[in-house]
Image 1: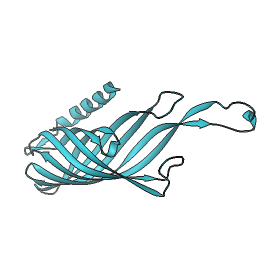
Image 2: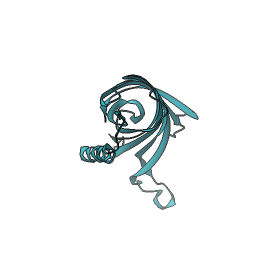
Image 3: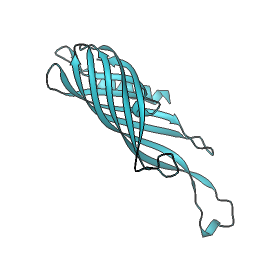
Image 4: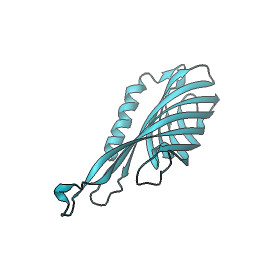
Length: 187
């Protein structure tokens, strides 16, 4: 589980390290986020997409989180892939970030097929892969030097889930609030 995550981070870091420095400012950030858009945690890579001036820039990020599945009959893994676009307003090494994104959540549930062919028998449960998308917002404070190095952040992330059968998400739109804490490296 750790090897694919480390490989992905090293690959992304290597691919963009060549073009990361322009006029002394860092454009790439790899970071670990606790809670937030990855539900429990996520490893993320962020890249500056467009800079308006020395104060305002737009970034895109992609992440990965792997969690143990919640099924009893067989071990499974839930995978989350958060994507985000954000605007970063800078005051030197202090930043305010406002972002919007979506997370793809792949998980497995028990699927018990009952029809006329097995009506008198004990049905055999199997795992069925499901995919859900949920939206999130982010409002964060970041400490990050323009030339790169340590990045630390704290913020709030409302998560917006659609209706999900057999869950606590029974409304058309369900909101959960989460804080997020992150630490990483900018280059």
